[in-house]
Image (cartoon, rainbow, N blue to C red; front, side, top):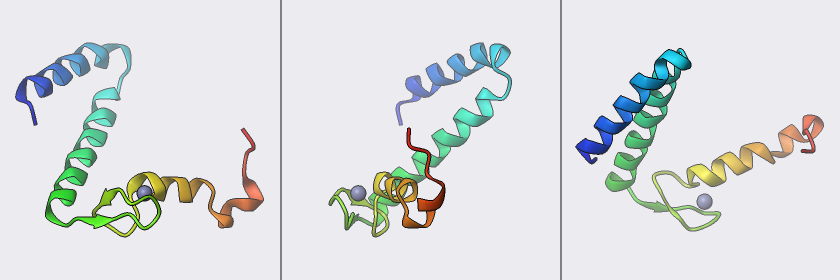
Length: 81
Ligand SMILES: [Zn+2]
């Protein structure tokens, strides 16, 4: 990870923390998740069984999310947006 990029994000968050309380925690949490996910990929590479993208599990995060959204379990309460 580029250190200057990290510094920029930190600066951005410090500026916006005043306007949006809690944004720093939210963004840092997501950021941390992404970093963890990237580490996962480099240690164990599988192919997503849906789209073929590299993933640490059987299904990549994007397809996992898609599957969650259009899951048959949710059929009863889908909002048609
Ligand atoms: Zn996929």
